[in-house]
Length: 250
Length: 245
Image (tube, rainbow over all chains, first blue to last red; front, side):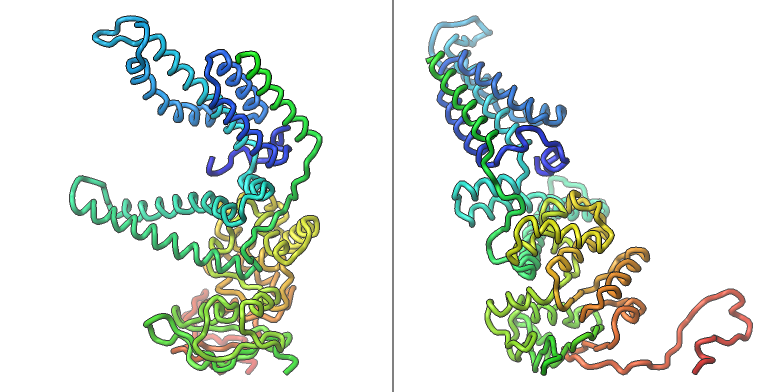
């Protein structure tokens, strides 16, 4: 979500309008809760709830699918090992391997749980511009230095990416093709070195420009946060969901 | 002197281990004056500006802005309120996700409320004729658009002096014309560098030359020749502006 496709493009859903602090606290609370769930039905309930919240944020479908499948690629590895490594009742024979019901359940639980947290976080990220997240963190008394670090890391990850492709293009137009030889290693090392030097120098210049515009270590805020009724309402709903799922499924 | 907005006195400056970039530079910007500084690449124009803005510390020399001696960081904060500095590379100047936030950054730093900052942004953007940019994403703008937005970020702070480092480099004619119109409309005391002498001639009224680290006033109006082309140029003809002399 480096380029914030949904957050800046002016889509303003209910979630977009919530105070960033509400969203940060909500996501944190929900993630901790989901991480502590130990039963499949509860995990599924939580997952469907986060799908619903994600739908509220109206993310672009294609991109969301790509992000979710990328994350689930890692989860796939769990399915390769967990069913075979947790002792228990054999589910079926799979060649020389004996997956157990306990193992399968464990893998399923982890998958559903991860996806629940993922969808919820995705909804939050989709509905909050990065500047808003920074502001929310500040509102929650996170130290200013950490907030600035967060904001600029985000901002310059993109910049470094652009610098990288610029240098790479400069190499490619002179017919550079990576191979397994010294020539490639040397020039890839140059590329990384130049990337570091350029990014560092650019960082200094940007800082100079900011200082010239009166920057004194504190990022100013354009949209001051106010806690609205909708924030209280959302947190109450979330607390209710967490409580109900927690109680019903023990 | 009351009419000296900006005054450098025997300023010398150099980079670590290297040769001196500025040698004993003395210069004053007076009320209502617009000064061009020309010089080859690497002659120290940007360094000169960085010294004025307090981004580089000179080895020696004194700086006064609006009659106030400038020494520590606090004084430079005062300088930066008064002097708007347009960087050579707009990418260095713009760092916020949207144009609105970028232009609002300066006014907010000066202690304006968010509402006031928004108003200032709107006014500045419409002054430059780029109202439509407000919600655009900074890094997706074209080179010319970025330059106009960077100029907006400077003007939004309502500076009393402008320093522009090659404001028209790489711009097309329309955007250059736009910048000329804006500068001539504002008529702020300024120091401007460029390699485009025609541009400088239209927006400044005196010229200084920076060469070998020394800043000296240029001898104005030197008679010189141009290669030029026009229809039937091979036939004997006279040029009107020479006839006037």
